[in-house]
Length: 196
Image (cartoon, rainbow, N blue to C red; front, side, top):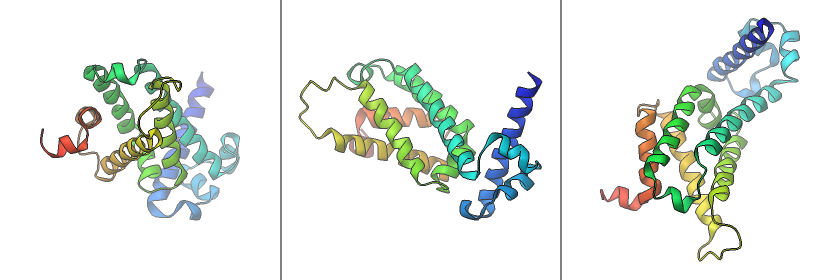
């Protein structure tokens, strides 16, 4: 148990070191030595957990995405057509999601605003799309619109809102952001902009 706690503390120190460093210089200019110096650990300790700085970044991203997926699959179990009739269920889900995003805001900021790894945008969009596909009607049912364009619109809009929220210092509380996302998704942006 003590060792697990020590490992957690070390990984947390490494992550915080990376966060401090990306505020000072680009990820490309950061070395493992820089991370170790900033975290006050030796290189051997770093290499016990990560093969290099890219592995560190990959593991951070995967952990964030895995946690998001866990929230999504736990909270959203009904099909989209059912969920649109349950705004309270959507709000509970969105609130939990924004609380997690707020809790890990420094890491999401690093990945989405500082764009330390531009591929994270696409990975996040992929997760949103995967969830939408999971909650959509079966593929056998004919659709009268271009689903791929709807997916592109929705995923880009959600990631864009998240980037904007992070870039503006998260001034809107998670609960209010959750309500805003639910309203936009249920009513559409044009209706929201017209004040209806």
